Image 1 (cartoon, rainbow, N blue to C red):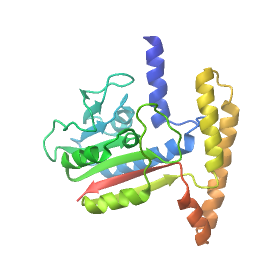
Image 2: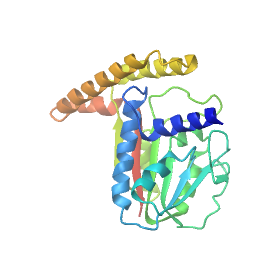
Image 3: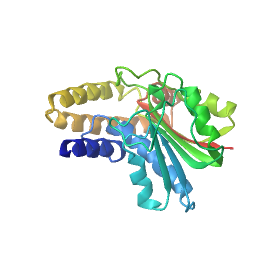
Image 4: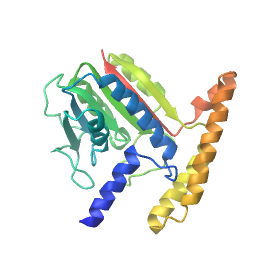
Amino acid sequence: MEKMDMKKEKSIRERINPKIYDATYILTKTNINVFNNLMDLILGNSHLKVLDLGCGYKPFKILLNERLPNIEYVGVDFSTENAEPDIVLDLNKDTLPFPDGYFDLVILSEVLEHLYNPMHCLEEAIRILKQGGFIFISTPFLYGNHDKEHDYYRYTDLFYRRFSSEKRCEIVSIEKSGSIVSAPIFIVNLFLGGLQKKLKIPLFTPFLMINNLMMLMLEKVLQSFSKKNAFFKQGRDYMYFGIALIFRKK
């Protein structure tokens, strides 16, 4: 039981409180920055209804409760293994057991890449969302297969822009993490992080910390150049670790 609690605690921390020594620090930090922007948009809603699809241990419930303690939070996942869902169902094909326009916010964080039929899930998310409600999505892009049985897709900003225009949704915010200059270091981080996890020894923690600091420095330099030069801006848009965005239902 204690081992499971430690696993749960580590899983939650890595999703909402990334440390400079985490292999995916920059990716996770970007996701949380976008989610914090979303919380600023919904602060006035004192009776918030939230649906977390692919909820895992519900890390975002912790973030929301810090600022909005009186919320209705429902978690959905496909099993209770490494997760604490309120409802268990298959997001690829099952209909969500809620009426149209019920929720103020739907969360889809690091979920869509694991669905072989993601459009069904997205359409269901829009159906049960109120007019003016929000959807928070984060998906990896430059990332290795991280589920032997369920890892099917990678998504670009072009996909999300096309989807939003067809489904009458507005993109409130969209942010990419990393760029082509930091991509090689990020790949090394993923390898070291995976190896460290297998060895169960924090052997590479100093290297991960140095790599993350180096990537932050490179990104700051590239950001400065991209403001003045279209070539460098293209370099930022060309390659990235992942995308986080906020949809609003019109």
